[in-house]
Length: 316
Figure 1 (cartoon, rainbow, N blue to C red):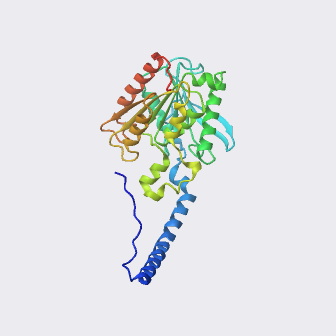
Figure 2: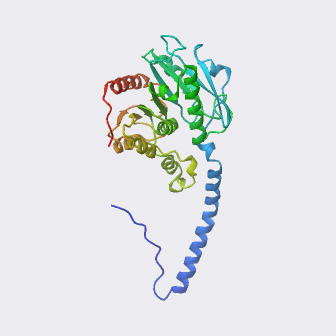
Figure 3: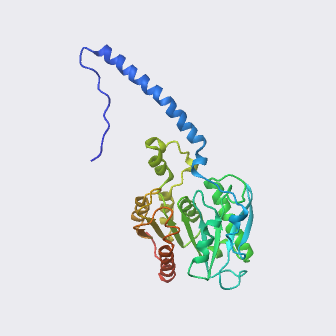
């Protein structure tokens, strides 16, 4: 049943003056209470990028996680020079375009080195890995934002394509995009702006505005500016409008206490024509990435194989 908020009732008949004074006093009280709340909301609005993004800067120990074969993919964007990272396949020639490519988008406090072990341990040694580094992260300057991250991501893909003597479209024809948490949003943002056939979302939210409401209460949604509101539902809707949308695999931990698994379930339920859902009963927001890596690897391998063998179908 839909709940309807009812207005405040006036006092009994004959107490109109007292009722009016009480109403004015109540309104004044609300105003006095609203002032600090509004100031707090303005502070959140002004510093929301500090809440959304938690950049980490590289030191020598962190860079040591990369294999010696890993190379920096340098590109120039409107925010300056950006470096992402390419991990070549464990088999084959590192200078040859790999049979399969994973393009990785990290979470709000993630850097490319966090994925070094993931790439090293993955069962298919024919895969290359392009690890996207956001502006302001790793050794990059600039400031992160949806627009800046999309620009840096496309520049990294173009840079890798140039190294292989090909173009973006040819590179993406071999690629699977994958993002974790906030990276699910930057991943979908890239997918919505580029041709792609496979997308994997680990612990995705439906929209950042809904996440803000969950964390800050009902007022949390409006303090988020429109240019920071990552909306995965809208991006999935854009993909569904394509004649042939990409296949999407959503993996979520049932015990995720950061992004509730209900959000991943909602995305899969709204777009059943081209999405699949895997819920790991004991995994949370972080363990899905580490302790449950074998389960994730098995799901990824099966997803890629089925996508390669399945005929292309329209979502319409």
